[in-house]
Length: 152
Image (cartoon, rainbow, N blue to C red; front, side, top):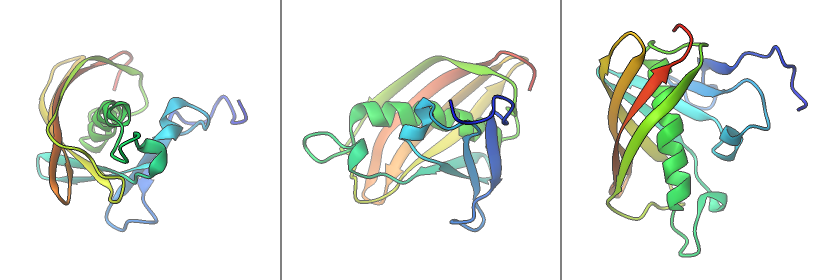
C-alpha cells in the first residue's frame, strides 16, 4: 500500500467539483472503493443524496450499468449517507444486510444518484432505505442495515 497507514479512514469535506456538496472517499487509495471513484453527498431534509460519476468501467456488455457496480454503489452509498446524516464518523461499521430490486437499466451516459433515508438509529444499528435514480427515472430501490463496530 502506498498511503500512510495512519491516514484518516474516510475523507469528508467540501467537494471542489460540486459546490454545495461534500466529497466522501476513503483516506487510503488502492481499496475496493476506488473502483467507484469519489462520491458526492448532499443532505436535503431527511434525504441524503449520494452521487457517483459513471463510465464504461461500470458497464456490462449491453452498455448499461453492471448490476455488480450498482450493488457496490448501494453498499457504499449507505455509509456515505450515514456520514452525511452525522451518525457515522471514523469508527468502523459493517453491512449486515442489503436488499436491492432492479427496476430499469442504468445508463453509463449520466451520473447515478442514491437518495437515502435513515429510518432508524439504535445504539449500534442504522436502518436505511433508498432509491437509485438517473434523469430517465428510477433504476433500483434498496433497504439495508449497517452495524457500528466501534463508537460513532
